[in-house]
Length: 173
Image (cartoon, rainbow, N blue to C red; front, side):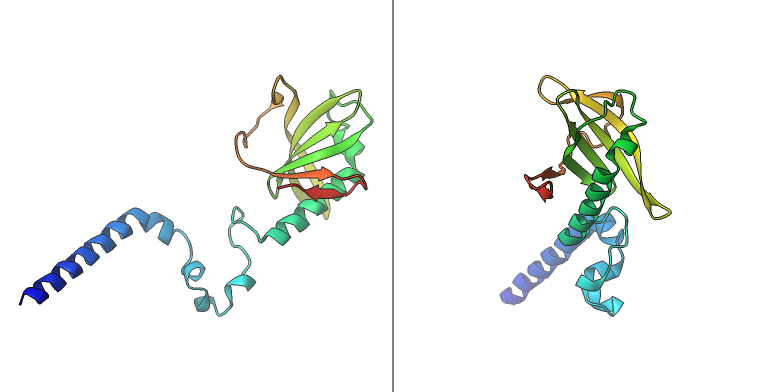
């Protein structure tokens, strides 16, 4: 009889723990489709399922492909993109870029006459990249100082790309 009493306590404790976990994780568990947890339900293997939400992380190689495409396009059209900036002085090219996500990029321009950073929202319209300025920064005492616009990704981690000696964009982190 004593061993049955111990089993009862075990099951009561297990059920109680399950209810507590369900209570705390209810929103996070049920906010995503069941296929995210059980990929065999979708009839596909998880690696072949494309992300559903726009904010969901892409595989690293897909992120890098998107970033490289944006960086190449931006480098080719830099002067045209920057003509709208009142404080932009021609000359120089982008030297560093920090991606907050796949559609927001901080771009550092370096030239002897002017040094600044711009935060762009990148959209693709009619097959062409569109760069909408969100924030404009100049060098401050210890970091970039926001001069115009906003900085919605302040303090968040970013993916850094720098140009190497050959002019290729290399991911640094």
